[in-house]
Image (cartoon, rainbow, N blue to C red):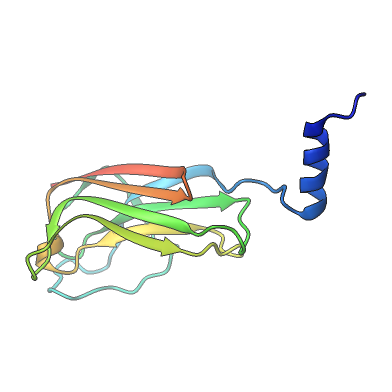
Length: 154
């Protein structure tokens, strides 16, 4: 078998540790609303919960205080020294009390190789956050889109 430049490059990458599995979503993605024991939330009120909280599978989300919705997924091939995840929450236009409109919220999240699951969620805790319309959640690593989920908030 002839020795090519490509095989030499592949061998060099393998020896230097540059060759590794890409981070990717594996298995089913859970999405919808997270279960909550309370039904009548007050502004600013929030329930602390574990990532194992039950999720009712739906794309239609109730536009009311206390509703927590999002995705739970498994990532494989992650290493602590890799590029972090970028979480994008695309909104129909949340206007904060200072009068600024937000069509997108961004969050950077370091990879946690020991984490069994990842969660991306949004909880309506203030009246100005409760905005009906299409909400899109997107997870990127660098330029690679790993996940996208749409929700219809009504």
